[in-house]
Length: 354
Ligand code: BMA
Image (cartoon, rainbow, N blue to C red; front, side):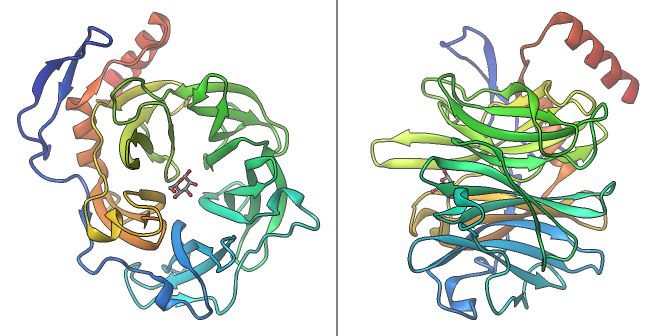
């Protein structure tokens, strides 16, 4: 079920490799007609904006969005909204759910932002990776919760400058794995790091590099929602930031990472698959931004409900299909680099899975 029309083969002059560029027949994600689903006007207390929410389906069936709420000082906190159908009738906590605590956690001086939620079966808790913002710049902090009422803080787990982080739900080779986006002298690429206890992190590796030159994802990329576990690998939505003369454009791309060795990228889409088009995405506090921090998967095990911040102003939702995304990747990605041995190993396993 590939929604893409005939691919057009073009030659990339940068790498002299052949790439497949697509003319999309149908969009891979369909915007909910009632977007935006949450705005400033829905809030029970005065705020500036609500965006970039983490998302999870709770055990009672409710969808919970842990929203980034920017107050009228310009500082952000997190506030939970719950809904039975994940679309409307949101029940919003009457006051901030999780606030910066800069007295004990100075790294939260200027607020906390952009949570990504992962349910961790081994701990029977949700891990919330979020951006803590202070004088040193943005860093990655972690907290655990079982009810989104009380949170156990782990403090900064990745020092500034770092953000766009999510924990994988299960250990890999006995270690926890975190995907994140440090800014280093190498650039703004996606990395993975491992930890025995969620506190001490090492074995840092780049897993996906921002491209260069004219590409839509040149110079700066980052993880969006937590990777989706599929039989073929970790299906991962990431954002690419295109700098233009009139500002940045945040668009979404797709990559697939090996299940057992998530530092290995198996496929990466060439073109973006979702970008700012609707009025609420093109205009707002920061124009031309779509920024998902969470998704839920439908009962059918295939439908993706993607929750995204639009123009740093409101929350919107779009639906897609895991099957369609995987099949799009099959026909719209370039081969990834890696050692011959790694590739042979993984291609062999992919073939056995077919
Ligand atoms: C990124 C993050 C997001 C924000 C986006 C667009 O760097 O800070 O929180 O939505 O920029 O402003």
